[in-house]
Length: 350
Image 1 (cartoon, helix red, strand yellow):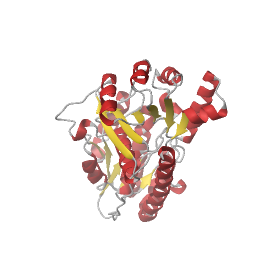
Image 2 (cartoon, one colour; image 1 turned 30 degrees about the horizontal axis):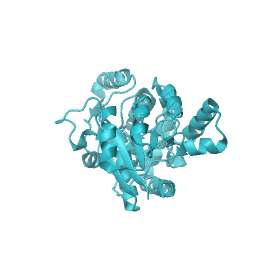
Image 3 (tube, rainbow, N blue to C red; image 1 turned 45 degrees about the vertical axis):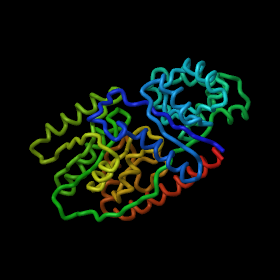
Image 4 (cartoon, rainbow, N blue to C red; image 1 turned 60 degrees about the vertical axis):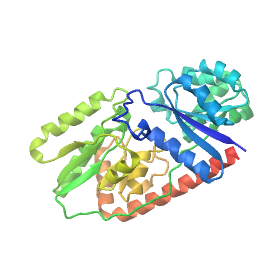
């Protein structure tokens, strides 16, 4: 029987007071924890640990005695596995990648590290998106001269899971404001600025004051110009009544409560593999506009072109007119997606 251990790296800016609740109120932690709980519910022994750095891994493996260790994201230097494989020769190490290639292009060491990982006997690459799975398989097959079977054994598809706990709410169309959420780490590929323009246009057409909600506690991958432009945009609009509201990062339950206060969610980004923030909004009964290009469970009719603000406005009107249909359709699609995920993980570890 498999015994699974998820290991995440503690965030670099960790502060015991600011970052309570294990210090990781982030999508990566939530993603790993969802899968950890899901495996336990299927009768598979599973644990999750937070490491300060590479040097914690040996201690955590000795503590739990796993058959499989899942390293979430690229943070363990390849050379560390020379030591780890000698210390734990029977452990299978799965390096789990959460990004599509356009986002991965911003990680300067990614291709080099992935190539180095593939040289180790007991290291497997776990990919959470079909296109990225194909691209990494092609890359490593070419690098190593693997057969199709060798490639299939070393590069596996492990998609995201999301807990099945859905709520409903009524959209209040009588108030004179509209609360639109565009949550998620501030980075260029998240497309915050264009979505803000679309939200302003939409609010103007409704004759309402916009409250555009972000959580800019995490600025990543040259995201500073993005938040500066958002602030500048709404400062210039000061006389219009439209406002930018910045929320600090918070524990999951608090974040879900915040999501439940929104009228509509926007996640029309350029690169996603799952989009937990969008799932959080949908789980609380908030209609969502996503992009079918990148969010695998998003319903086609409520997806928008991430390069076209007019199309985003069109989908905002559609979701505002039919919020219940938007929510129910997306919740059903998300449920179907994550049910398939559970079967994939169960099949692999059983």
